[in-house]
Amino acid sequence: MTEPAETPLLSARGLVRAFGALQVLRGIDLDVRAGEMLAVAGPNGAGKTTLLRILAGLMRPSRGQVRIRGEQLTRHDPAPRRAIGLLSHHTFLYDDLTPSENLRFTARLYHLPDPEAATRAALEEVGLSARADTPVRHLSRGLLQRAAIARALLHQPDILLLDEPFTGLDAPAADRFRALLSSQLDRGRALVLVSHHLAEAWELATHVAVLAGGHWALEGRRPDDLAAFHGRYAELVHG
Image 1 (cartoon, rainbow, N blue to C red):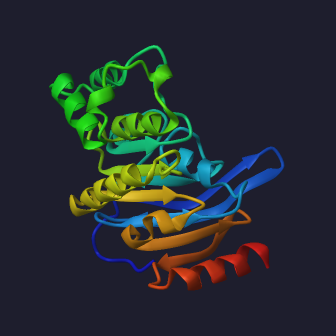
Image 2: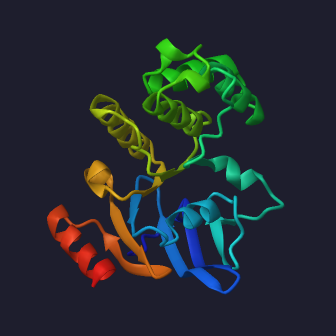
């Protein structure tokens, strides 16, 4: 990617992650600035989720470093991680609690000044206010995903890391979520979105990358032509 003058909200240099003899990431660099969204595609097992976990500070790279607003992300200093909101395959929600109870608990973990107000705002933003008091274990897959989205956004993070965020969402909910992501970009947040279906957020992306073989097989500004990108992706991934 080109290098504007401002410091990226999120950057990584030389990320390597190995599990024994298996090297999953082989030297990943990235920069994501305010108002930018990097959309990442790649085949199963390419290391996309591993990359997000490293960027979120949940996994240590074997080599390399992650920086938040220029400050190195480490295990010993939790402060930079407060700028991150993560939506992963794990909801981080307690099944026996309601969405409201889960979010109030999370709000207190982040020491938000008004947990009740933050909870109401987050649930309204994802259209879940009507089910705020239903135990999570009784929610459908789509409603559960909305609750997880609300949790990721609760503390108004400057950086959003999203792993297959449209999973389980019906068409109206997906449209609402796209509008929500657009508003996050308008507020100057930085987004990294991983998906097998980049069409779901193609128009929001400012940059795209293909992760294959542990490295960027392609990365740069988002092209206008999605069909051409799909053709190029097939060449890179399937030969």
